[in-house]
Length: 552
Image 1: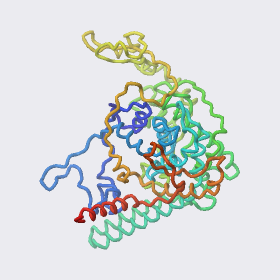
Image 2 (image 1 turned 60 degrees about the vertical axis):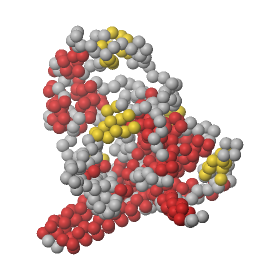
Image 3 (image 1 turned 30 degrees about the vertical axis):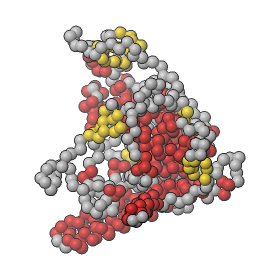
Image 4 (image 1 turned 45 degrees about the vertical axis):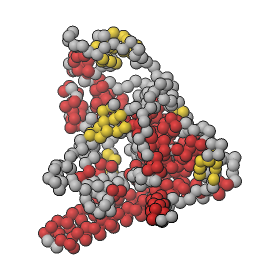
């Protein structure tokens, strides 16, 4: 079991291919602050709307009992693996099917909606159902990739190109649809505010009127920069780079090539970092925003090469990431670098900066336009302060040991013992303490293997596959993107004739129990309707009720 709130722990647990990981974390979302887009009330998501607000945590129920407050969340990686198995189950009929490899590819797909090192692609936002859309696209093109997006902890770029090419095809339509959707939400919010004002007609009505006006101004301000770009309209891509990156028309092509390489370097670096360790301590993505998917084509032609270099010292790292309000975590001798107006790197820590909401509805989803750290300047400024550090602070700023603690020796543990005396005296222990301390050497990492270790006992399945197939799952509403991808794939004229490039739509598979073989039926794509599965289920249940009523 791992304790921690970072969502990366979910991905890191998946890529170990160890099926018995569990994560416990504090509940990071206050559901009392969630507002339903359907009824406008707080306490629940629109997918759970029943026309009434959920009871707030901490209040009393009808029997006078206090409603329990959820303080922790318990996430079971085995259950997540089950969901992923059913999500990609249709691919098992292909000869190269390997579920563990698909798990690796799923983790890779999630990188495109953003992570600690890269911003999300403009077309792919998690709240717009991007993960559902990417999973659907992956299953549609799997048959013609002739392999996987990743292999041995590395990215296979010529297959990633196939992914980008399909996302690029729906980019214009996606932003047009998104703009229409935002206008609908804005109009509905305004109508709801007006209705509330008309119903009250009191002093509270005036408060609502002010709140509605403030809300409207906030929305307009939020979308002002996005209106300059006018996503989906002719010339919007050039306007995107002009507004977000301040790139002129004369440098447009050169800049697109530069950011293309930086972003592809990024996805290669992040994936390798997850699987094989850091490939370069000096690499970073030098932009606040990601490029467009249509500018990421032909990535396999890029020359991606990393230089390992060396990591920052602990204090240099803290100077790179801490805001001025957190300087108490720094030694007094170097705090002046952050707060003194005469500091040679004071421009790294501005008191005022722009928050670009980037078309999002909430400020926490925005982009903070802080300056990038210049490594050479920071190291130079810090070096002139190091002689002012105390002996203990110098020790803190050094390279430590890798230490393992345990109650008794484990003879078969896979570590290389160095000694039992850590370099830093603060890690010493009383003689009477039963805990043993070993200073160990980190073993060099080999190639990542997408396999479950032999002898691993798999947990019992708990997911009802029939419920899963009936669509009783709540995602982030990726249906819009899925429909666009489906139409794009089914409208390719050469899909029926160009067999050399294998770009035909993926066939729908069904199981045949004759000779235990799978047969292919109807190699066509269709627009998915949101209520198909639900309506079919209701219709079948009605047929069952009618049959039971029949006396025969």
